[in-house]
Image (cartoon, rainbow over all chains, first blue to last red; front, side):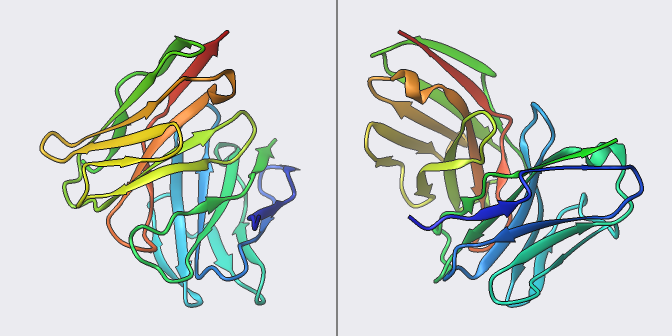
Length: 116
Length: 112
């Protein structure tokens, strides 16, 4: 069964450092997303990406964050100058290929980011 | 505001019972609703979805009910099993490829 894969599973970084979280979406999907979940809280939308550009972003997704699809398979989230409050589980998701409001989003297993 | 929430943070049931998990949403423009299951340390796993032009949809052991009049969504799990123990989130969106807005989650505990 196709799945979204994320690496690494756990990333520890020092405050102020840059991190890149990596995702390989399902191969024929067209929509890509990043979400985050602070421990014990609900899943929060960060950004969606379609046709090689950001289609929507939340208030959380400020200038500290960026996304990129560097090749045909990877989708990355870069966090510049990490802060303690960036510590969370980050989930990548993808949906498609045909769009439509009933196209479910498949989530990866997440990357746990710990900023110390 | 535009948010999706759940009525109860926890629900405890006996194995074999039926479970009902509720969710209230506030965005009347939402067109698509989904229930996700999240086990500890894992990503959300799709359970079932429903469009706004429907009021009921059934899957294997699960049923989703949508009441647009009172903006209420529920997930019914028949013959609940210990493997159903997880956090359940409802989520909404208003068109393809847009953000899913998640509720706060209900932790379902099934005892045998």
